[in-house]
Structures are given as C-alpha cells and as structure tokens.
Amino acid sequence: MNILVTGSNGQVGRELQKLAPTYPTFSFVFVDKKGLDIGNKEAVQAFFESQKFDYCINCAAYTAVDKAESDQETAHLVNALGPQNLAIACQKHSTKLVQISTDYVYHNHQNTPFKESDPTSPQSVYGRTKLEGEKLALSNHPETLIIRTSWVYSSFGNNFVKTMLRLGKEREQLSIIFDQIGSPTYASDLAKAILDIIQQNPKKFTGIYHYSNEGVCSWFDFAKAIFELEGMDCQTSPIETKDYPTPAKRPHFSLLNKTKIKATFALDIPYWRDSLKTCLELL
Image (cartoon, rainbow, N blue to C red):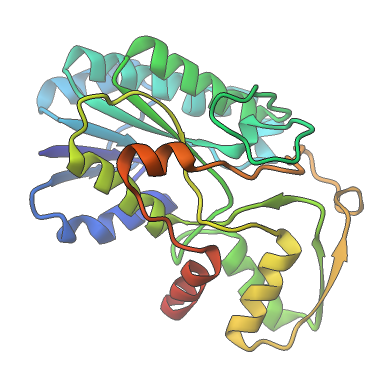
C-alpha cells in the first residue's frame, strides 16, 4: 500500500516517519513544502501524475495561529486551497485522503464535549481557514477522512511542552491560563491512530472524526503536570485568558467527544498524562 505524507517536517509528519518502519506493508513517500507545495495546484497535479498512491495523509498546515491574523492570504492558501488541490488530485487518481483539522473550528458556548455533528463557529483566521479546508476537501473528494484534533505536542518541532520545559529552566515563576479547557494530543498517538485506520482499509472512508488523548485539563494543569513529571521546581500561577491577550481568539472549551472514532475503528486511545510521560522520557 503506497502512502503519501505531505507536511513531513511537522509534528505529525515527523511522528509518521518514526512509525513508518513498524508498518512493513506500507510504502511511504514523505514530502515537505520543498518537495511538494500543496498550494500550487499544477505542482500537485503533476506530482500525482508521476506516481500512484493509495492514501494521502495531509499534515501540511499553516499553524502560526496568531500570525495568521495578519497573514490571511498565506493561511488561506495552505489551510484551505491546499486541501482542495490535494482532494482534486486524490479524486482523479482514486487516492483516499486524510485531512488533519483542529478544535479551533469550535468556539461555541458549550460545556459538554463536542460531537462531530455540533455546529462550528471559528473565531480566528486559523480556525476559519481550516474549516474551509475541510469543506473543500470533502466537496471535491468523497473519500476524505477529516480528523479534528487539539493541543498537539511531540518531541519534534515547537509546542507547549517544549516551551514549558525551556521556560521552566529559565524562570522561577510562570503564569499559565486556567480558563481554557481541552485535551492534549501526543502527535505520536495521532499518527499511530491514522496508520491503524488505514491498515484496516475500511470500505467507507469518509466523514469527520475527533481524536485527542483521553482526559481533560486546562493549560495550567498541563503545565503543572509537565513540571511535576520532570521534577522541575517552577512555581505556576493560574491566570485568565483576558490577562494574556493574543491576536487570535482561542476556544475556551474544546473538549472533543471521541466516541465515533473509537466505535468505528476500534481504537484504544491513551490517557493524556500517560502519553505526556512517554514524550517527556524521549525529551
């Protein structure tokens, strides 16, 4: 089975590269932006003409959430038009598409975990462009699987865990937001879930699904857990979102209900603290 992975230098892309040898029946092609600019429709079409893929996992994304507010054109090109270009090529060449999306599509006043059928209400350029990318992918290629995830971290790239480890060494005290609630997602767990789904080669490969690690916390709780597991003596104080203003609005509540993906693909999802411990051991 031939699998194309775009955005191979991102967190999920790097984790897929790491997992690739453990799936011997899969043959992978990993490309970063230099290898394939998904925003270039002609380049995408030419790439798919040159070789055959059974699946495409799109890990390419514009994830600089705050910068996107002032760089809307680039965010739209990568997060919306990119998935559209891939979907058109995938549809033409009978390739199934996995599109990774985000909890930022939800910005509703809700206190129960979001189901895939709940209304979307993105309040940032990042969230709006990712949602548009979902719609364009699905409308151009029925065999598209959308996976919305949240709070992604790994031993690769820039993320909250690595930032906390750095700041925890540099400072004696940190103020961390406590009124944003969600679930961390270890990129390795997400990557494995995607490959396990593909390995099943399901006949019905379409629709929107949620994936994050099990459990719930605030950013404050997340930071406390990092320092506790690492044995770091950094004092943390909880603050409200209003005390740490950012260009892009973050969802205050973005817990994802994962019943659908677990039931459909028989996935066993790890608890967030267990996965955090695994990642910290690597770091």
